[in-house]
Length: 127
Ligand code: HEC
Ligand code: HEC
Image (cartoon, rainbow, N blue to C red; front, side, top):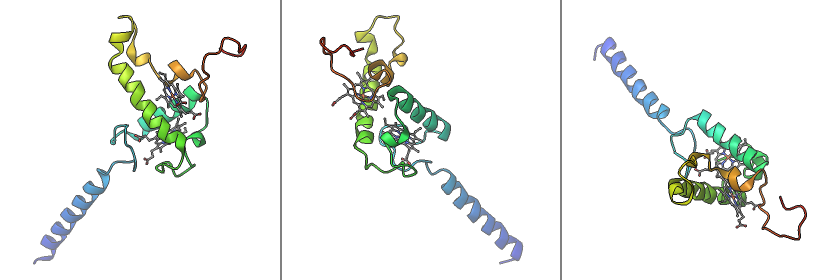
């Protein structure tokens, strides 16, 4: 093989490897969110969760090991994402036609609190 031909094949090889590596999804363990979500969108989604529930990332995650499922709260949150989606999808059935179903979020129920208080008429702190 002539050297320049060899170099050509070698560079094709590296381009192929690079393409495979770059097309790997960014995140390791997404089971309900879009596996190919961009870094920015994932970040915005997570910041929203923290705001809607008024908690830190560590409420659901072991810091810097975000792919792990060791925390119960993370697993509950997965079901909650599905619940929120389900209500949004069928929103037109339940809400007035002017209601924008995309405005239905974790905050609609949680209102800045992770633990939802059941309604209790005797509790003066009930919101
Ligand atoms: C209310 C719980 C909750 C909070 C708070 C939360 N997350 Fe998450 N996070 C999740 C869930 C659930 C998933 C997995 C979603 C899925 O399976 O599709 C996830 C996934 C992730 C992932 C992807 C990990 C991987 O490789 O699979 C990262 C990174 C992450 N969160 C970062 C953060 C950061 C940073 C914060 C704080 C700003 C945060 N999260 C706050 C619930 C939460
Ligand atoms: C329709 C109302 C509703 C919506 C919307 C909702 N939740 Fe919840 N959530 C609840 C209720 C009710 C509980 C308590 C359930 C229980 O005890 O089993 C709860 C519990 C939780 C818990 C467990 C808290 C704890 O202290 O153990 C987490 C975490 C959570 N929700 C996250 C979320 C996230 C994240 C979203 C948005 C993706 C969301 N929720 C949307 C009603 C809702």
